[in-house]
Image 1 (cartoon, helix red, strand yellow):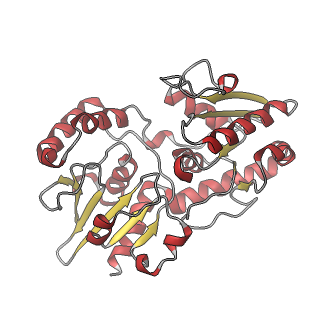
Image 2: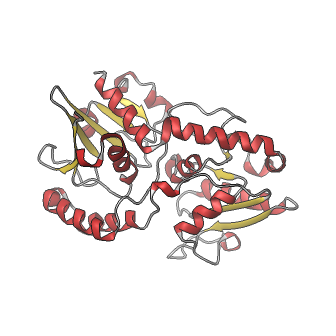
Image 3: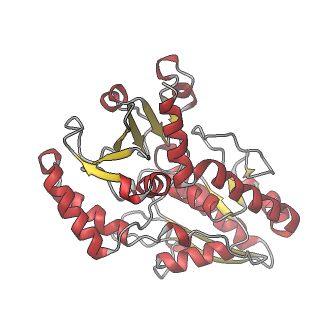
Length: 333
């Protein structure tokens, strides 16, 4: 008999959608229940769940925030603290040993359509309104997850030689991230025969200047974005807000892409190997034209990277695998 899962009803279902999917995949949808009474009065958006069977109860936190900060309140409450953005110093700190688990990057997905999202949001609001400080954000998160693509859409496509697609956000406070992405665009456009499409997505408020020549004139739907990423012969990653592992990296692994990346600064479930499951640009992006150019014409390397990045996703990063690892860790204590 499978255990019952109680998920904190005030959780962020937009950023947490990936892990809700994992809970349903691993335990079955019928065994996953939203609840507030079994939890302390955690702040809004906390992603906490309880695994309860006839013998024991285990408490698990998933921290998917960009910051590397570890929340002391939820850390002290739980048996296992799964976190995306862990610094090497914290990962090797004895006071966090055993409880802290690096889960790697995830991304937002659609788990409910609008009618079902409305029903669940109202149900969870009734359960958790006393612990909410922002009602608008609470309901907006249900709408936001419905506008994403379901996990089944993140399947592998066929890359087109010399076609590169990139679509990223401009960040107001992340100058290095913006600069790295700009340099990559310039490199691709400078390589003869490469067809580059995309750039920075237009901001709702045009408050980041200097990137007008690198900003797209159109907005891409999530469906168009996924189809074009699947066709792209290369996917470029660089740490985003607060040096975090962004959604893009998780998507690239799920799609089985050949990934070129600047150095990754957060702990992953398993280290990546240069030229096996990722290309790491150890120098400045602007000095990497030759590396990228050679990579684009080396089909054998591209295909090996595609296969190995997808294998990495299946082994470490899929929603179900993340939940399996966290629960297994919790059951050891």
